[in-house]
Structure formats: C-alpha cells, structure tokens
Amino acid sequence: MTKIMPAFRNEDDRIITIAVILTSIFFVFIPSLIAILCLKDKLSDEACGIIKSIFNFELFIFIISLFFMIPIIGWFAGVFIAPLLAIWNAIVMIIALCSIAKGKEVSVPVPYEFL
Image (cartoon, rainbow, N blue to C red; front, side, top):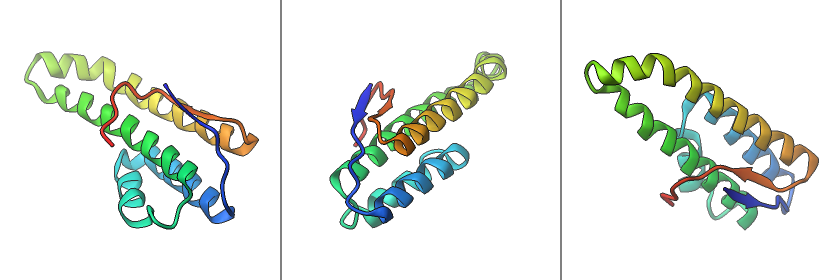
C-alpha cells in the first residue's frame, strides 16, 4: 500500500490530481498515463507520486481484466470478478479523493509498481 501525504505547491496541482482520479474511474489508466507523460515537469513531487500510484493501481486492474478474455474459464470468472473489480476501483478512487479533500495522506493499494 502506497501512502503519500498530499502537500501541493499550488491549487493547479490539486485540481489536476483530482481530475486524474475522477477520470481514472471511467477510463482506467489512460488519464494518469497522459498526466505522467505530459505534466510531469509541471507537477509537484507529491502530486506526481499520487498520480503514479493511481497509474500503477489502474494498470494492475487492467492486466487482471485481460485474463477474462481466456475462453470459458475467463468468461465465467469475468462474470463474477469484473463487477467486483469495478466496485473496488471506484471505492479506492473515492477514498483517495476524500483523503485529498481532507489533506490526509493518500493510500492506494499497489501490489506491483510499474513506474
């Protein structure tokens, strides 16, 4: 579990981080990847760390969902596990948003770090 204390340099860091988290609920890892590639120099280290944690978490969920494409076994598992992954994703993102709003440390369950 990655824990990062959000100490944003300015309000832009906070807004970008919140926008990435909100859009990651629907578009998986793509918004965080775009933010890492395009806005890495403009963001503070804490905001970049939070976005990297979100990226790692979302990419892990995406890789797990690729296993649902395996014929028969993956289809049965996908029927039961895919909704649970979607709910887990939404819960983690909402908790991260609440932590940023309260100024507490953001904790994201990252089983494997890709970046």
